[in-house]
Image 1 (spheres, rainbow, N blue to C red):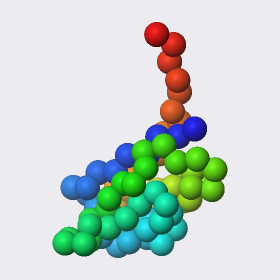
Image 2: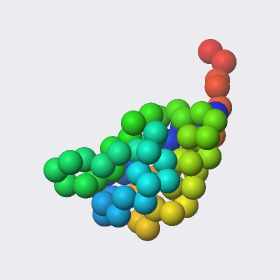
Image 3: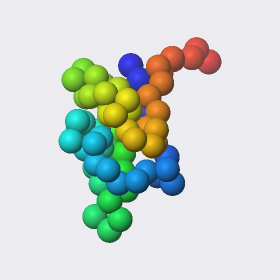
Length: 71
């Protein structure tokens, strides 16, 4: 499982993420900046989130392995 994060201050509103992973990302109606819909996508959405991170022209999307830690 992965954890997705976005840096809205970097986002330029290109919308590639929404086209590739509409189950994970959306765009703010006011300014077009990325909106994260789910922090922990699974299955096809996980693969799409990874692709969106690669395609982001300003590297505003981070995808990291979500390693569970024992308490």
